[in-house]
Image (cartoon, rainbow, N blue to C red; front, side, top):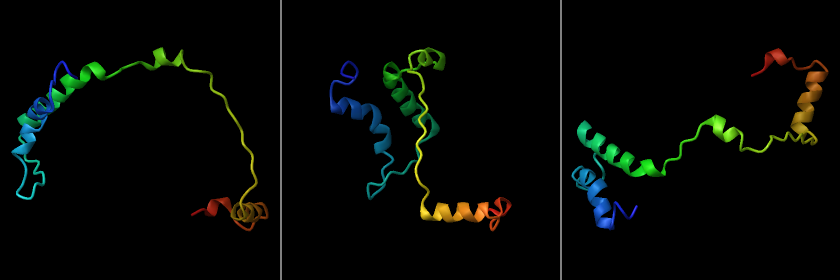
Length: 99
């Protein structure tokens, strides 16, 4: 968002500064930020992202969707499915004894 961030440095100053002081010796992040710092970063992100978030209600969107089409595809059973089907049909396997 160029009206808010005119450079990469500006962006990093907003969001990276609170995290940089929590870097460990090997550069791993130690997330011991206090609650106030976490809320500050989250609030900043929300304020930046708010104009880009599109919220719509289901009732508004439903009228714009195409009608649903049901398509039934039929195919042969695999050998394992066929064997199980025949075992169930012949009463060799009970549907009540499922895994």
